[in-house]
Length: 374
Image 1 (cartoon, helix red, strand yellow):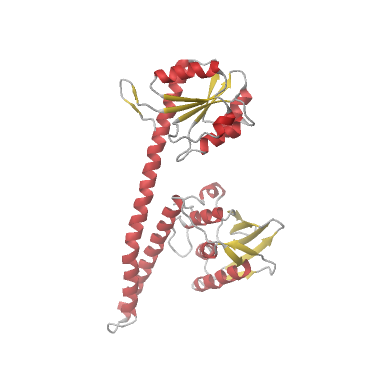
Image 2: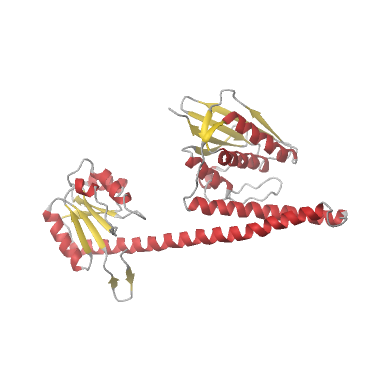
């Protein structure tokens, strides 16, 4: 990548690679001359057809694309050039006619990051190229830092998980009286240790999930799965938790629910999270309802709680990582702000969606939707 740093006196520019895609020599030659004089390696391609098959060993740092270049669709070409190279997307500056405002709007709406108008003002060309290469360099550094953060998070969570599992196992041995009689007071303390270590283990597991998802390494193992059977099992499991608050989860199944090709364990994870949240944010003694909806193209499962709902102004951030709303669990249960982010990523990987609505009679209704095979 081109490296450009700023000092109080001037820019220091190191050699970088710029690709110009244009079939008009009156556009290509002046740009090539100006940019070569700045120390860049400049490569030119004379047509969209040639550019479409361009897969260099050294990825360019910046692409200048003339929107008048001969090809089927210059803006499709713009997207392809931007995404077809290895690594991070390459920034594209579109070269346009000065008078054509529609070109500007379409270029920026598709894949271009900026536009340069003809006839070129070459001091502006140099300045904008410098600016976008600086931004590209900073973006690369941010991406490297993000990858390092994810690796550190994964390593820390993994190293914490094993001792937490040991703490839980040893606490269970003590609670069972295996190594001696346990008094009521000691049992209460051991129960507290066990519950606290379980909460920490849940958090560590979620952090491991986040590091995997942010690295884009969510691997699915889809198999034909009867959705009715899966939801029934999830409701049965979560009703044990709901009973501790005197609540109940009522499942209103549709016998026509289809068999879907999904990752059973991952979708069970989504259902468990939604059901646990419904119990967590509903008052004690609540009735949580689960129902299904089926259309010709989609199948949805809806989990509706009896909590206060989600404030409209906070709904947009609900599925973002480490994001929590002002609504608190009714029983003081812990909430990390990670579970719904994981659910969103799992549904996304299944080409499905997850969203939330405030129900008419009160409470929040979370809906997961799967596309049906054509």
